[in-house]
Image 1 (cartoon, rainbow, N blue to C red):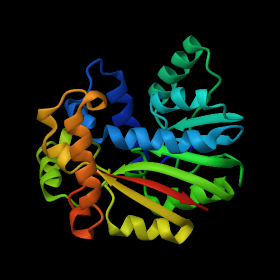
Image 2: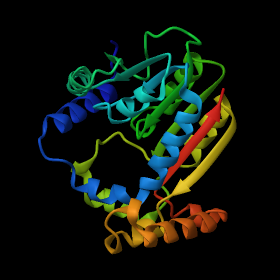
Image 3: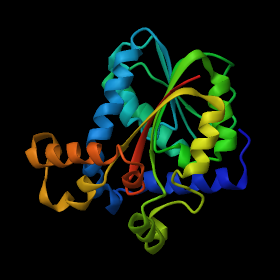
Image 4: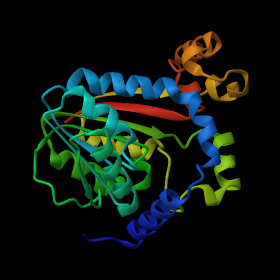
Length: 246
């Protein structure tokens, strides 16, 4: 597995993260984008049956475990962190799930051309050089294959300030999505659909506990989607769901 200095730093960061018994403090905020996770799984589920699927940057396998139950023909999951792959493989064995976990550099895989009907990922592309990762995804996807990714955005000034004040909470090479990343996406993939999340749901996150059972969360998430129809408010979104086709 060929690794650049950036790859080695990412591998070391995520190996240490997954070796730590304590979760990241930032995890408390993720309930603000739980609706994005739900939409992401709904899209994958609609297309997964009898398809060959790649989990691109699988981490400890949280999404792969869910998608393995969507009746894929084959599910392969790759990640640069051998600690993550070890934990994911052990959990899949315990759950009786058929997932082919492999330690691999997402920017330079040894997987075969045009193999996958669907490639998905959660918070992975912003850890990679997209001038390498996106053509690699295009190489691996079949013609008309789908890519489905959730990624953080780098346009909200308050979130960016928080990131600067908490540098140890993230790897030094990560780069939340900006306009340049979307331009690279558009070079390789067509029929691109973007959906934005996490403005009012993040601002008011102390005022609800379980988003699934919160009428307040459902209300402000609907308001978010109305606001995101205007490009100005998209600058204040936290994350984006990318749904495209080769």
